[in-house]
Structures are given as structure tokens and as C-alpha cells.
Length: 281
Image 1: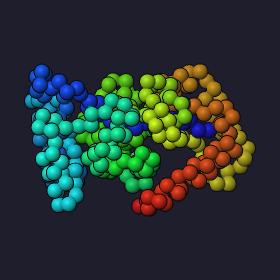
Image 2: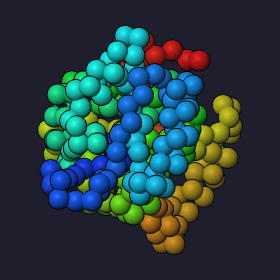
Image 3: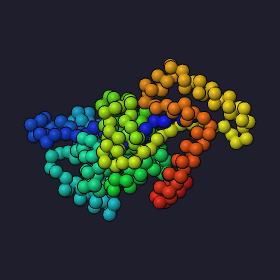
Image 4: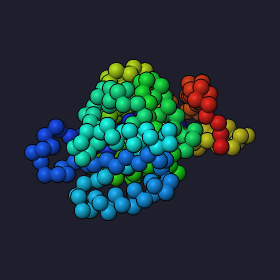
């Protein structure tokens, strides 16, 4: 059995119009460029200060870690930014996001959940398929990465779609694209990667059940039958659908189908992981 949920490229909703002069400042989230890596002393200082600044200003202050060349890249970014008191990613859809990332290499930050994690490989795949460049910021888990996304501390993330659903529905983050052949039923307004001009970029954050090697076939069959029965239950299906999961078809809910799918995933991802020189830690 596998219950599949699409991956989604998302960012905090930080888009605005050019009519800032007619509005009370600040009317939109702000950006603070830190020319040192996340987790360092300068970054820590900036995060402590901006957490309190948002109370006074009434808007989030987004930390952008723009590192490299002894901090000169980040300083240059600040020097060349528009003098309007704010910086961010002014994209309203997937096409605009990709265009902005191409025009502004390494200016955006992307959350990953450790080296070799699904989120890390997904962002590498996205980067290579779109010809873009951005900074990777590792997190210890998906929850803190999502929290920083909602708080505006990170620009981009490739996440398991159901994990983002409450924040997406609440307008706290913006979904730019789902990495599946069809749109996600839980958020039908979010386009597919095919629709934003990157055809064939499909990623599923999927779940399945395994048993130890050598488990008798009759036990496997009994456990599989119990799972099939659970996934056929209307109440179970509704609960899974409500949180954004896409349930595998009945034909896919067999040990043989899972084994074939698993092999196909290895064949697809191993070359990408090898080319990125990702090694187990």
C-alpha cells in the first residue's frame, strides 16, 4: 500500500504592488539581509532583534542569509536593493517565481531537512530542471522549517503537500506549483509544474508499510488485507482526504505493486542523488 501526497514548491506570501508610497509604512513584510550563514552569531542576533521588531512594525521581518566572499555578496545585495525599505520575492505564480530566481541567482533561500532528505533532493531537482540557483538552508525537521516559512524567515521549500495545507488555506504561505501530473484536489488553484513550463517534473512524498525480511507470505497477505480494508472505509478515506493525502488506487495497494513502484523510484532518483554528490551521513 502507498498513500501518495504531492510535493509542493511554496514560499511565504510576500508579494506586493508598487504603490507603497501611498500606503502607511510598512504595509508589507520587510527583509533584513544577513551576510553570514544561518545559525551563526550574526544570524542569531538578527533573529532575536527581528522577532521583536515585528511587534513594533506590525509586519514580519524576513531574514535573508546571503553568504559568500567574506560577506561582500550580502553587502552588495543590500547596497543594490531598491531604497524602499523592503526586499522580497515579488512573484505571484510559478512562472514568475522561476523567472525571478533566474534573474536573481543565489538571492533566495530554500529550506531542506538535512543532506539527502526528500526536501533536499527535491530542491536540487527543482534547481536543475529550472536552471535556477539559490541557497540551501538545512533544518533538523520539517516542522521547524515550516515554522520559519510561515514566519517569513526562509523563502522557499519543497514540502510534502499535506504538511502545508493548514498554512496554505490560512493564507500564511503561497503554493507555486505541485509536482504531480494533475492538480492537487486539496488545493486545486495551485498549478502543476507542467503548467508553469517545467514538464515532467513529478515528485511524490509517499508512504508505505514494510515488514522484516523473511516474514511469511500469509502474514504479509493478512496485513495487506487489513490495510486495504482500512483504505476502503469511507470515514478513513475522508479523514485522509481532509488533510491532503491522495490515496493509491486499489490496483496499487498490493505488495507486488509497491515493490515495482519502489524499484522505479530508486532508478529515477539514484542518478540525481549521485550527480549531486549527496552521500549518507
